[in-house]
Each structure stands twice: as C-alpha cells, then as structure tokens.
Image 1 (cartoon, rainbow, N blue to C red):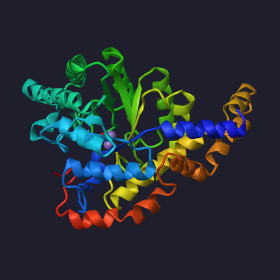
Image 2 (spheres, helix red, strand yellow):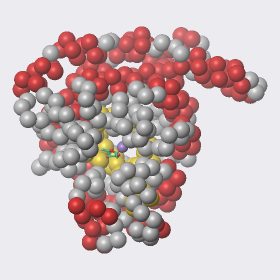
Image 3 (spheres, rainbow, N blue to C red):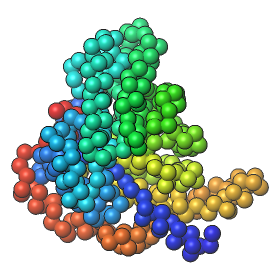
Image 4 (cartoon, helix red, strand yellow):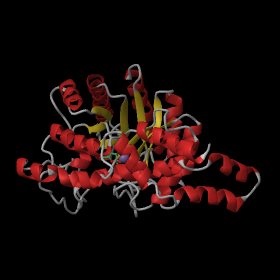
Length: 389
Ligand code: LRH
Ligand code: MN
Ligand code: MN
C-alpha cells in the first residue's frame, strides 16, 4: 500500500474501532489502604453513564459501557439500556461479581460446598438475564477462586467444579451471546488461582465451544510475560474474545493503559491488527481505577492511548516487514516495526476525531466544557466503585 492509501486505510480502521469504558472507573476506588473520595463522582449507574457519554462525545470512539453486577444494580435493566441509548451509548459487557460475599471466602464456583457453588452459579445466570434485558453481547467472568496454602483443597477437583459451572452458564447463553473467561495469575489467592493463565482459560473455553472466549487483562501476568505472544496465539485459534486494558508496574495496578509501557501496548495492537482482529468482534475494554487522578480526564487519556497504539500498529508497512522477514533481515524487519512505533500519530488521530465530529484535542475540550465543575456542584456523596463497598 502506498503512503497515502495506508493513511486513509488506517483512518477508516480507527474510526470503526470501539473502546469500551468500565462503569467502575468513574466511581471512587482505592487500594486496600485507603479510598480517596473525589468530589463529583457518580452516585448511581445513570450518573456513571452520563460521565461515559462525555468521554464518548469528546473522543468519538467510546460508545459502550461495561456494567459490574452488583455495583451497577438497578431495578429494570431495560430502562437503564434505554437511558444509555438516550445518551448515545449502548451497554456493553456484563461483569459478574462472585468475589465480594462472605460465602466466597474459600471460592465461588470452585468452593468445596455445593450450596455456595449453587449460589455463585445463580449469580452468573442472573447476569445472563441482565444481558437479555440490556442487549449486551458479552458476559465477563473473573473468578477470585483459589487457595492460599498447599493442601488447602484439591486442585484438580476444583477444576472439575469450575468446568461444571462454566458449562451450565454456556448452556444458558442465547443467540449471539458470548462468555469471556478472564485469567489472573494471583490475588486474592496467593498459592494456586483456579484460572491463573491463558492456558487454563483456553482449555475450558475450547471444551465449551465457540461462544466461550478468553479475555486478556493486560495487568494479570507475571512480570516479563510476552503478552503479545498470547494475543497472537489466541487470535490464531479464534479464541481471543477481548481485552481488559490497563497498565501495571508491579502487579494488578489498574493504572491508565499505555502509561507504564506504551511499547508493549503497540506490540499487542500490532498482533491484533496483523491477525485480523480489529474487526472480528474483539472487545477492546478498559479495566482501570483512577485512585488519585481525575477520573474523566484519565479515561479520555486512556482511550487516546489505545487509539494511538492502534494507529501505530496500522501504520506498520506489512509488505516491507514480510519481505525483510523472508530475507532473514533481522535488523531490517525490526526497523520496519520501530519506524511505525516511532511515528508521531497524534495529528492523525486528531484528524480522525475531527472527522467523527468529536474533538481533535479531547482533553482540552473536556476542560473547556465545564462539565467537571458542574458535576462537583450537582453531585454530593459519590459511590465507591465497589472494591471496599
Ligand atoms: C480482577 C478484575 C476483573 C474484575 C475487575 C474489577 O482483578 O480485573 O476484571 O471484574 O478487576
Ligand atoms: Mn479485568
Ligand atoms: Mn484486574
């Protein structure tokens, strides 16, 4: 592709990429040491949607919002979906929560007690009911299940209990619905997590069938893990359902995506683009918490970071790269990738936003809108995102 047509193709692809916002990123959050409450945070799921609508208005590429149940519990989810529609949004993935109940101390769907397992499964099935009402495509499953001490429980038996629950949920999925299984190396379990890695998630999803896919949370790996390899592998196997994007310096830090390692984000997006994953239904979700920084600007920044990494990935000269690879030109191939990474794509994505009717400089536009001051004046007594709630 010539320079100009590569740029127009990149612009078209960037316009159709949708980045999903997590409702919980708008609420107060913190570490287990302290939640620093911020003025003006949403007091209800509806107010979280209103904030998300601001992010979408300024960026033009964030039209869906993921819910977390029960943090976003409402009486009627179809009313919430209609409200989202009025704001120009759609409701996205429904995130289940089987980790904040006393009953789940020893696990949820892998708990040794069948009564606790039944309760956890009931919640997961309720989440599919909610998807029916919201029109959501994806159920996102993350299990905090695991053990802290060797011998605490039977590792293999827990896998059996997990498979049983997953299969019941799978059977309940409707036409066009999917379940996304998320893995995480450790925390809160410190010895053996029941879904610790992509291999375990993949094995379960493979057995379940095509509606079961793996979700890659970029903060859920051991330091040094080659995440783009995992992405390439899952994509190749047709099992990459989506991302939970965030940054990490140490563990599951949930910082703004692209903040800790923009090069890694580029490498991930390159594998997505190269593997044809940009328009294959992969959910590009953020999963972040903004503990000390302003939330809406941080979310806008995160959307921009994903977009910029995607733009750079789209600008990789595929023909030059393939030629260098065929010729065994190690440095040449690496240079092709680095040329794209080192391109300043900010003017390009600004143009894309402009053409979408959003703002070339979304952060400046948000500041100029006065929305931040308005919600501080209007909203008194914000809700916590859920972690300590
Ligand atoms: C677990 C996790 C999972 C939860 C979210 C709030 O660490 O990444 O996706 O649903 O955080
Ligand atoms: Mn996550
Ligand atoms: Mn996480």
